Length: 311
Image (cartoon, rainbow, N blue to C red; front, top):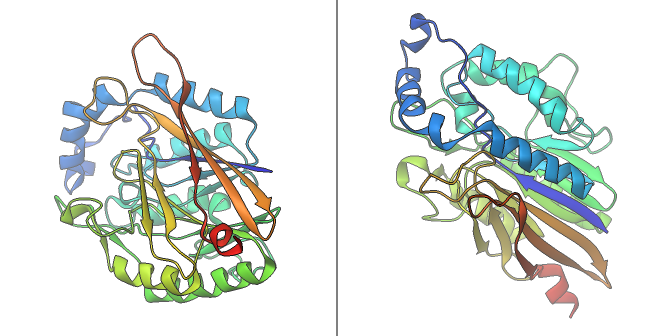
């Protein structure tokens, strides 16, 4: 049995002191948005309680799907590094960056420098980059008989845009890693920030070229795809060679009860080998009402393509 936690979009706050020169960019829009909306909707009290509950579940691994920061100030990036150490070690936590982590040109490189240990491939899986370089995407990690493949869709965009982008090189290596993991008989988890499902979000927040990702999954398959970005609890599917592949999103890990989006939540997947296939139980845990802490919200028995094929 393997227990995998899925969290996303903590948008760590509060914002550090901002120098006026740092706002001479797209950051001014994000700063205004934070002051008007997110400073009130997203609080550390919800996030801290969520992390305590995650630790109580004693998961084998944590998948964090990006947007650690808000406007990618250097102090935000450094603070996120300290926060990551309280959530898990690089061995027990995998991270893919989000669009807020790449808010302005140059921000993503700073994030890579600070968070690199959480975005590195295991040796021996064919994706370990030379020392001294930025993290290589996709990365691949093997924990027991579960392979976790992380893609980066983060890229600096213009004002009022939050689109994701994914390179052809990443997609080619994704296909190779999916093939290798299937040959090993592993349960394959693909994690990214932007949703890869058509019309899953507004056009200015979409994953550009998502059809190319879906084509890779349609050919090579996967058992589970995890993402963030929309701050909603959704369960969707895309085509795989043996049947539909579950595509799961989770609300922001710091969202409060006063927002129009669902309050803070995480997903806990219990993955087990079942004959020639797999079983996967998804539990949603988080907040729903005032005065009630983190608790069980719902449970879903996910239909895994390889399990259907074995049946």
